[in-house]
Length: 404
Image (tube, rainbow, N blue to C red):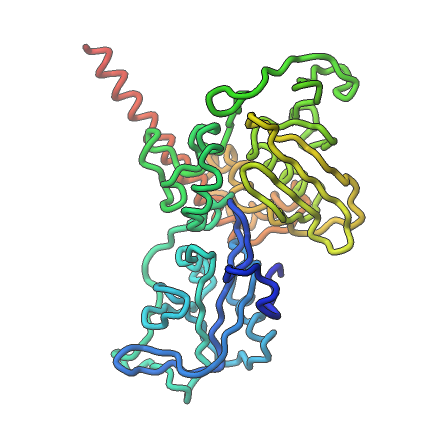
């Protein structure tokens, strides 16, 4: 359980209605309307009641059980409650949909607004003005349409929209437009020969210098740190090379990264490999500050851009965790799983979910949910569909050119 009940508005920065989750986050806030009555007065309204906020809700961890636990936190009798989410604003209950299965909770990510909030209303059972099953004119709609998963792209995504577009515009250019505008709104990108929204996240090779080749050229030299292997240097400082660290990034003060995203990715990899959950306390295109989520742990890293370059350099580091391993980390989400197991899932798209979860938990030494398994399969399926579309397009063009 990662979510927490907001105790007061003093926890939120002035001018905001939710925590600053930063770009590429999978967290959002639930605005929970409860202890009132759903009534019809020409339009559906929620009369009376209270409003509470639950922050740091995670896309892959939402379920009816979690919503019930939230209600219990508020001392609500959950025996007869029903949950509904708004599809037209956090306070509008005139277009709400019932959540009767855990699959319906996955729909929440499609209705997170620009402030990363979604509205949920609690019906407390019979006798509270609730539409009855026999009265079709007052009946609340259940969900019949198919699911469109948007939350993990966003690795993030989830309608991050204008904020991410503003903050990471230059990074998107330097990384082959992998976080384009369409990625934030749809499941698939129409440009780039139909490659799916996550396809461009796989197998990326970043050229040093970033946008327009800015930055000093790096030179390769021997270093004891690499145990005889070549370690790139940039202005006398080591350049991060994941191939030398066996998948476990080794941070040091002065270590350079090609750009902001590569630094973020390394931090997330550290979190996953070491089973320590971390939080990005500052996360923009010029400065990234991360600390361990455990209250008493002093692990901390801060990196910022070298002036005039896209290069990110570690400036401050406290590299020892005082906490113990945890079973779940935020970085090990369905996007990461899709990346790690894409070859297996492409070879065996019918890989049973229970078997997937068993293998992944054993190999990663972490716990996952079935929802993450479904999302990972969905993402790989979309990527595979995009790859096939690209191949057919290239074959058609090449064939036409050959005839000419």
